[in-house]
Image (tube, rainbow, N blue to C red; front, side, top):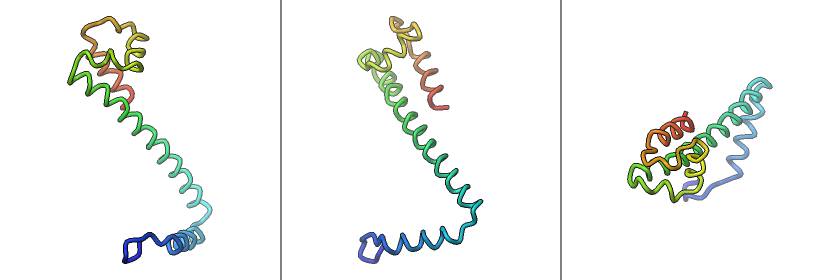
Length: 99
């Protein structure tokens, strides 16, 4: 970043290019592997956050889960859609997604 707060893309690109030239072939492969792992980590983090919202809604309002179609379909698939106490299955579903 420049002193005035704007992003100077030319300097950043030049620095990355100089860094890339200094890296060995092995380090470049490791870099790409790291990028792939970071991508999958970001997807897993988004899935965890997506699973957290219905779980928190269930804690706040026990009837809120029936209004959410994806969660209700998952509970129907597990045979727990008609259950009035579906907190434990929802907890297990959230735990499976989070881990």
